[in-house]
Image (cartoon, rainbow, N blue to C red; front, top):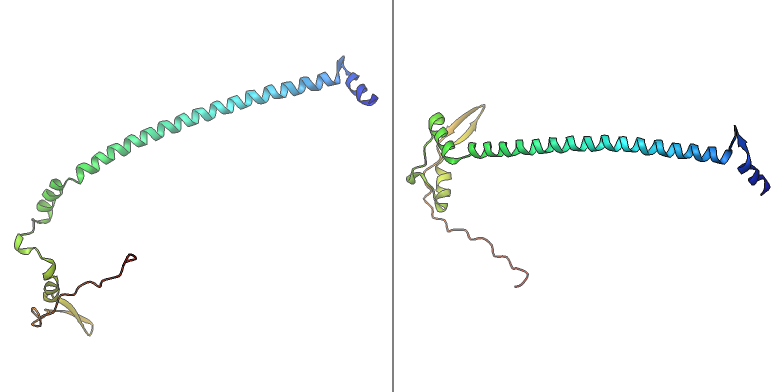
Length: 144
C-alpha cells in the first residue's frame, strides 16, 4: 500500500505523476472528440451529396417514365406501323375463332425437309373426318 501511495506522490518537473497522466488522458480525449466531430461532419456532407444525387436520379426516372408513356401510346404506335411497316388493322373476316384454330393450323404450309433442300409443301385442305371436341379432364378437388 505504501508503494501505491508513493506513486501518487511522485513528482515529475514539479507536477505529481498522477496529475500528468490525467492531463495527458484528458488532452487525448479532447483530441479524439475533435477528430470524431470532423469525421462526422465529413460523413454528413457525403450523405447530403448522396441524397442530392438520389433526388436528381429520381427526377430523371420520372422524366423517363413520362417519355416512355408518350412513346407507348397506342395511337402513336399504330401510326408508325402504318407509315413505316405498311401494317393495317386486321379485317373482321381475318379474325379466327377458337374452334377454327385446328383447321387453320392444318391448312398452313409447312416446310418439309427433303435431302439437303427445304421445300414448302402445302398442307392438305380441311380434313374430311369429323372429330369430337376434346373436353378437359375433370379433377377431384380436396372438398369432393
